[in-house]
Length: 84
Image (cartoon, rainbow, N blue to C red):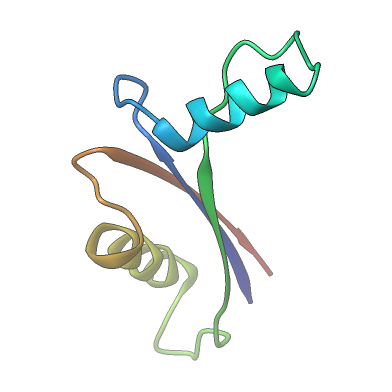
């Protein structure tokens, strides 16, 4: 089982890395770039759930992983997708 987690800064939070990329792209002649936001992507490989587990508990575990380690929920949002 695989899961993909995307962690992004909340919309009101300044993204200095994104701004630096935006300025660099403009300097290279890509004048149509108006904004760049940088995100982190995590691809997790998980053990298939046993009879004691179900897909809901896997979803809860991924949410806890995000809340405890992968995302700083004060300034970041996260989304995830589980693939069979």
